[in-house]
Image 1 (cartoon, rainbow, N blue to C red):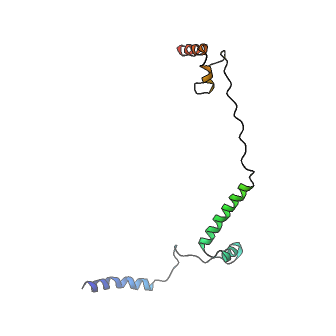
Image 2: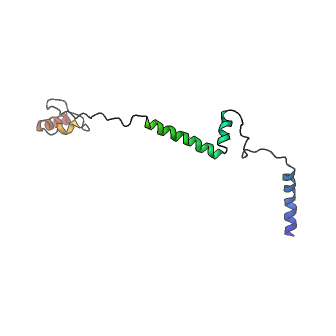
Image 3: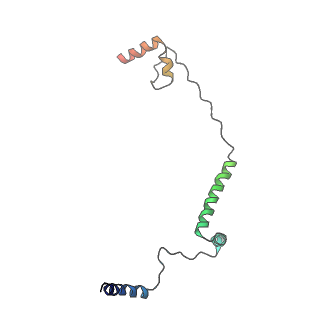
Length: 118
């Protein structure tokens, strides 16, 4: 009984699929062009996977060749040494490297404390 019911419910679906004309859906492939530059490339690299690998190889080749002719590493400019701040100068910023030299002097520390009290 169940087999008969299953056969009756599947029969309309089978008739519809057999009678439907075949159409190209989004998942199917279009015909590859046979003319122009793409046709010449497709003659050598006939599948999509080979095309992708060829493009990736081209990019890697360009990167390697540009690295060979770039001239190597450039020398870094020498960093200037921080200048020691004179005791008669203004108070440097706390985060600057000159502040460490500034607070080494006792008179600069008193100048800093006096500026805080203002």
